[in-house]
Image 1 (cartoon, rainbow, N blue to C red):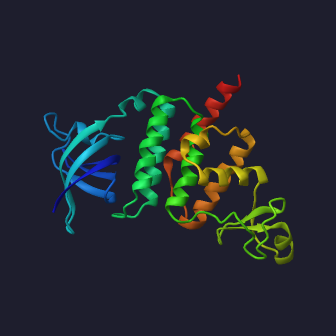
Image 2: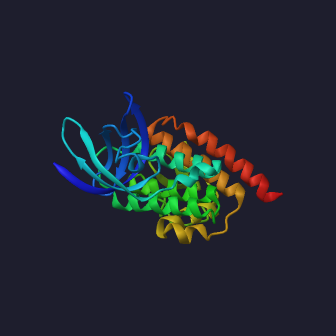
Image 3: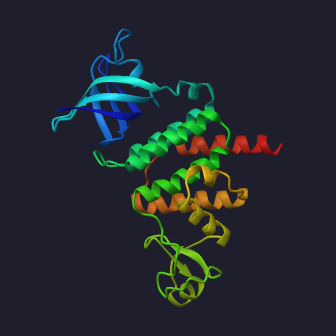
Length: 258
């Protein structure tokens, strides 16, 4: 069955001399792995439409035996990411994160739109990339259905924000200080201002969230929390580009401060 869909190229893998196995995130079908015959040949009509980070219109053949790519026309190329290491590694991280957390053939149009939005922000370079990454990761948790409950204590139902400072990682919910003491729980403590920021991100779009002023120390705390939280739900994802992105962020932070 031949179908058309918009897609973002997440990963390309050489298969034989001129063929490729391509992983894409499509608007209609979510993540799809497909075979692209002769896509690496110089005169191949698929060459430009199978480049990493490409935003494309695809025609694909969906079969149980394997999906094949028939046609791919570029809507927008983000090839200039390769001219800036920070942008390239950031985009690579986003693609690797999507590739390793998404199940095949599960539609998520909201996530698809967010990927394009993040790519646009990376291209423009007019925002704090670390903040953008963390906002995207929080929104990804929402798309995956594992957003922590931050409205009330999971044990006593308290809504007192002054004592709601702990996250039960495995339950995915906030716990008040009193219940932590009384139940000897293994929890992750967060600054109340950080909890307020997380709530804001979940109630607003990426653009609005990027306008929030938040201290670097809180961003670092949020980064550690998200990594621990994701690991508890997915295990070690072995995202190779994460450490590289962290190093690039440190370099950019030092440049910004000096």
